Length: 216
Ligand SMILES: [Zn+2]
Image (tube, rainbow, N blue to C red):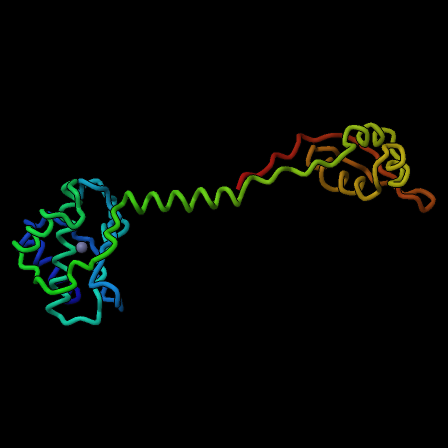
């Protein structure tokens, strides 16, 4: 346990009756526009029904300040967290500042500059937005319609060369190839290939159960 974590648990006991979640990530990081911030992932109004697989919250503290300021900033963020788990308005309200004063958050200039307190609602909303954007981009692929399936099946019952089949069905040789190697195969048709006098002919000789598409 590092120093900041140790102090977190100490403050939790000393000021918050150990009501704050234990699994909170505390990180010092280079921030120049603010002293600290907190991202809360657990549900508002509760600590209990959180599965604990991820930290309940992450507290970021500007690394460029002094230790005393680090600790004061952490207390400030802990007040946000406290109000959050109590289901209260966890922003910079009058009540918030009263609590800060009560637990000795130093009134240093700039401490109001903790921007961005992200509760789970905001985070979840953002996550939903991202997911729906991804879903839009990944619209289910429409199976490419290849013409002449029925005609080709009928023609293949009699059989013939690719050229003859194509002509009979009025579709291109390429389409006949795609149909036989992919679409008809998927539908379960068994197509036999015979060679006679240098001419390759194809004929349907049976049908298996259609191959079911595999769901990803
Ligand atoms: Zn704040």
